[in-house]
Image (spheres, rainbow, N blue to C red):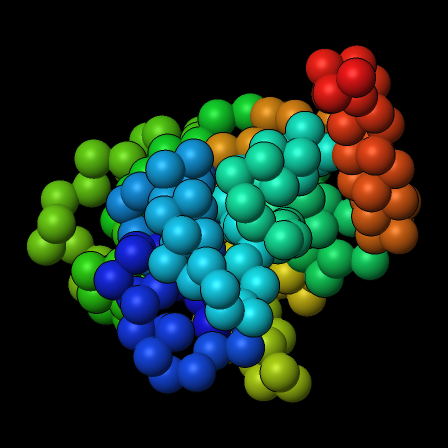
Length: 221
């Protein structure tokens, strides 16, 4: 079960969750809570102490440094989103992948999908389109006389994409690709290349082992 607050974590425990994914405010896309991982993860770890409930950290983690940091906070694992969007196997549109490499800043926003997901903030890339519309008045959403900026296919169904719809461009998207929502976590600036998913995992695991051995082993002895 994915949660973004300590209160939600308590409810997850009471509901009998087998594992809990803690999403920090650093995450890309729709963000559940307002708290960062560095304070939230240890509190949830304390909450489940003595229970067989693995804690998985999510939000802004893209490499071995984030992985090791999450382990130090008490998590048993990590969940990566943005890093896997920027992989060869990802179904994201090539322009979306390229923007993840080119841009290194994100912003917490509500301009996308207001009608579809009311009151659901997101973290998105600071694309030129986003910067032009970042102060969009609250009363405007994707249904208020917004033009169709493209089309896409989702689960086999052809769909129109209106401006501010919050639909991310997948490989089937056509039209004004760079005017569509491009979500990303705060760690996006650390992503420098498109890699096979397996290589991302290999570097994550091997890099974490090396980092732990090099950085901390000498402090233990």
